[in-house]
Structures are given as structure tokens and as C-alpha cells.
Image 1 (cartoon, rainbow, N blue to C red):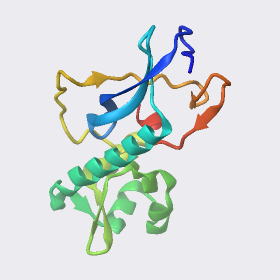
Image 2: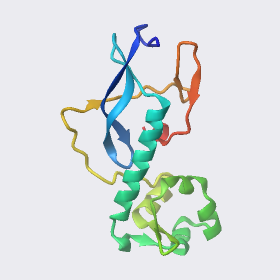
Image 3: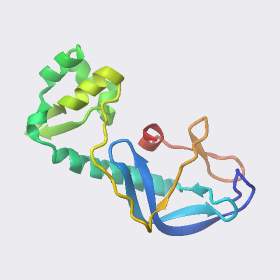
Length: 171
């Protein structure tokens, strides 16, 4: 596959990569397959790697949210009052359902993080970084080049790989 930046060729590599995340800062995926241009060093991630990255980010985020103090969470009625909407509108809101407010399920009821709610009310995005990251020296930092139409070029025939990935929105 040809590189669109320099015209060189991509070669497959396996190794550790560091990816950005709005909630985690940066996190490492180990033993991941990726393509790297031999000439300019541009990195391309295959679709399976993106899917793995999405699932790993979601897993780590849920784990960190579950470690937050339960007193920092409130019920749906109080959350709806803070946002100035009905409980039904709160539960149906697309951005909230996609994780723009941190939630935790306790005894079958959805609890909303207070700080995340306030941030969502002020900015429209209630996500904040849950951890402070320390990079390891042997990890390769990868900067993802996203095209204006939010597509990654998959091959030299300009086939597009449309991905509904939270990575594009989080970057």
C-alpha cells in the first residue's frame, strides 16, 4: 500500500502503541499490528486495531468510573433537574447515551457523576480525564492523521473505511 503523504510504501509492524483518549489521557496497546511508511514514518491502523482500541478504552474507562466514590453520583431525577430537562429526555439524549456524561449502574438504576453533569451543562461534553498517564520509553507514540471527511484511506484505490469510532471524536 502506498503512503499518501510521501509516496513510499507501508510495511506491517507489530509492537506497542500509545493512543490518545479524552477520558484516559493516553493508553498503551501492546502487541498491535499496524502499518508504517518506510520513507516518512506515517502510521496507519487497520480496522481491527481500531476496534480493539475502542473496546480497550471502554473497558478501562468503565473500570476507572467504578472506582470513583459513590457519593459523587446522583440519581436521574436530580441529574435531570441540574440539566433543566425531564428524566425521559435525560435517558433519551443521544450524547448522554454515548457516554458524554459518566454513569454508573447501581442496583439497576443509572447514577450520574455530579462533576460530569456540570461540565456537560457548561460545555456540552461531560468527559474529563480520569487518570494521569506516564509514558514508557519503549512505547511508540502515534499521531493519527484523520482526513476532513473523517475517513481513513484504506488502499491506493482511495477506498474509504468509514468508522463510527469514538477515537475520531476524542482526538
